[in-house]
Length: 216
Ligand code: ADP
Figure 1 (tube, rainbow, N blue to C red):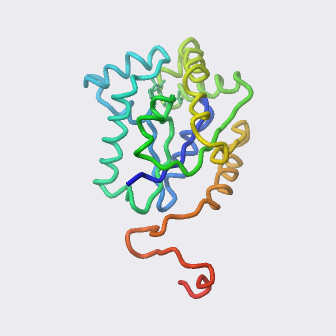
Figure 2: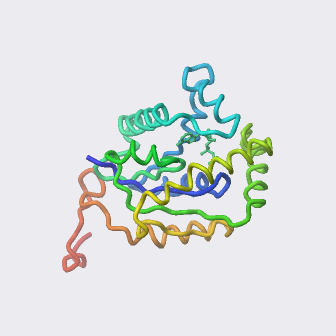
């Protein structure tokens, strides 16, 4: 069975994490941030070491271990009851991050929508990342050289992900707006996406439109 997925897409600093955390609080949604999953690894674990090596240069971690980490995290969320693959939608933030990852995840996720948080002003992204460095103690946000390398990686490898999906799934969201307005823009679209037939373990069912008035 493929997981229902929404992709949050955009350059570093576009606000994927901010939106993902909020959206993940909605019943029947869960948020997965690939960057957070890497940062939660012990730095002395084998993959933790690989992460530090690549992230400190603004580069992507190799694809296969990244996808394994993602699978393991989803299994963890499922086992602990925070994600129900049959009824819930996973909000993916930071994955897939290049066309190879799209391919590796192809049989595992059914992408329902992609929100492209675009930001035409690069300096704005850099400014946001530097502010975040102080707030969240992120080393890769502190150094302008690393920030520039990440933006380059985004342009060179990640942007191509958009070309891997049909255009009707892609929604352009202006990320230079206030977070609340970005959220509203996303919610308006999200609300229109058809729900799965069973929307929570066993209580809510899709009701035919002509019967909706009678449902409780
Ligand atoms: P941002 O989007 O602000 O650049 P993230 O927290 O998403 O930051 O990612 C931080 C770092 O984690 C990336 O620079 C990269 O090294 C690594 N990373 C995150 N997601 C992926 C991924 N899907 N594939 C490979 N590397 C990743």
